[in-house]
Length: 235
Image 1 (cartoon, rainbow, N blue to C red):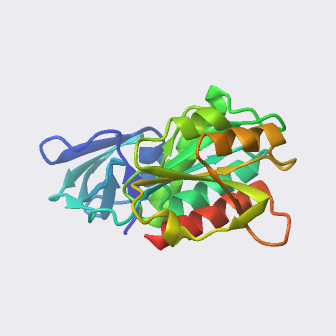
Image 2: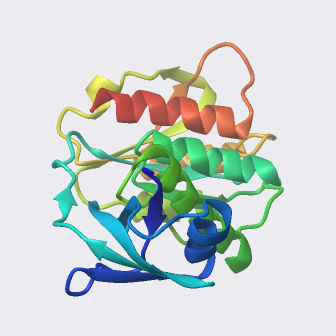
């Protein structure tokens, strides 16, 4: 058994107790047995091989081995600020951005947006990140940021950052030119109706570069994933 389970904090004294959904999945769905090997991770770039020592109806006790730390990250951290699509497309977006190694997803508040980034919606996104990390083997959780406007998303980036905004009239994206000396990269993706002229102007004034993604009209999640693949892949 090589299943992965999320724990909210690192193991204490080489032991950890799974509860809630994680325990129910292990006990009732996988029908695990004492002695089975699993992996646990806390979302901070570390994982622990573990062995089941006790099983209850709604909990499981594990004995952990020494931690395995992820290697240092290479290249700039990538953030995607995106006007959320509707419904299940949000889950798919989170899954793919997590797989691509994006550091942070920022729900973007725009004039033409159709899905509101409520606290409940953001919490669903965070749960989606955990599930995606369990599936793809990632140990560092992608952060779900607070909803921001176009201007504040760009302005909140730390020094040494570069930002791009997806726009059909923009230049062809060259990640190598952006990442020459950047420590953080931010890509902004608008709603299906597109950014307004005022939002694009505000982003440019804040330092973002307009970039195009080809001749076709892309859905929100397609554009976000395309940008993430190009920016994260350059590292």
